[in-house]
Amino acid sequence: MEVSIVQADALAFGADVLILKYAQALYGVDAHVVRRLDGNTGGVFAAVPLPPVGSVSLVDARGLLGARDVLFVGVEPLGQFGYAEIREFARHALKALAEKVPDAAHVAMTLHGVGFGLDETEAFRAQLAGLIEAWQSGECPPGLGHVSIVEHDERRGERLRNQLDEILPKGLEALPTSAKARSTAALQTDALRTAGAGSSGKAHVFVAMPFAKEFDDRFHYGIHKAIQAAGYLCERADMSSFTGDILAWVKERIDSSALVVADLSGGNPNVYLEVAMRGAGACRPSSWPASRRTFSSTFAASVASSTTTASGSSKST
Image 1 (cartoon, rainbow, N blue to C red):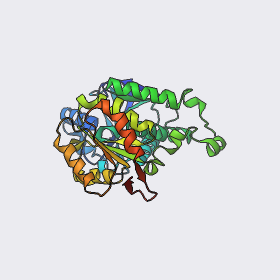
Image 2: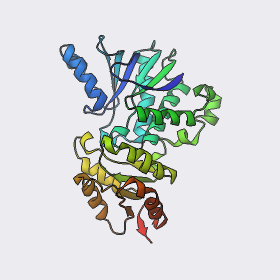
Image 3: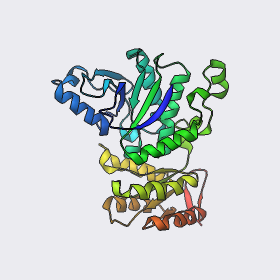
Image 4: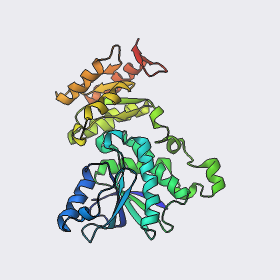
């Protein structure tokens, strides 16, 4: 099986099956797909309901998409859809595909988690690890030869391709497929072994900044790189991506973070709210750089001057 990153429109991309999550509400690509199918087929989703958590629904695209069929996989609401759930989603999707579309040779899917703020690298590794688990255990269509992760954003696609080349320089064929090999060396790299399965134990930094296109370069090439180089996961929250109690999720990620970094340059009210959430705790390490140029030195100084205890609480020195 080959995994590749393709820059394309997921609705127009040609594949046997397009795999999408359904997080008990519609977001992003799945919302666009449902609107196109439902609006052109007289309400097909009344006959094929979107799946609850743990279930799947296979829908004939009827020529309205590039893919022949769409497989919706029911997952937890976004606030509960973390790295472990991303890994299980990918594994479960291929397993369900083996039952629903055993002749599938080429499937497409999008990257999950990054659209609402999870660490891009860790989310990608978790999804890739789930795919590999299904492939190694034989829980996928027997003739599946290609999984395309479709990404509309050119810069993100480039970052993901670099990640894929770094993690699997020789491709999946270099990984073990026999039962004996899997028992001793399943998932050859630490990056894949711990992604999703061990993500909850990894320290993370929460970044309070606008979730907007004009801030992408500052976040990915200024802030995220420095945080990742220091050994942390890097997360931020898109307030517009959630239904329900978004503040509870944001507060949990802020409270459990080793450090909060805030970009105050735009005077964004959501950023000030997230700063206030961090400020509610006593002696919490935080950094408030106003521009990309000041971040690396400010972050390094903040890490050097803070101590995180084994219990997860922090104090400034």
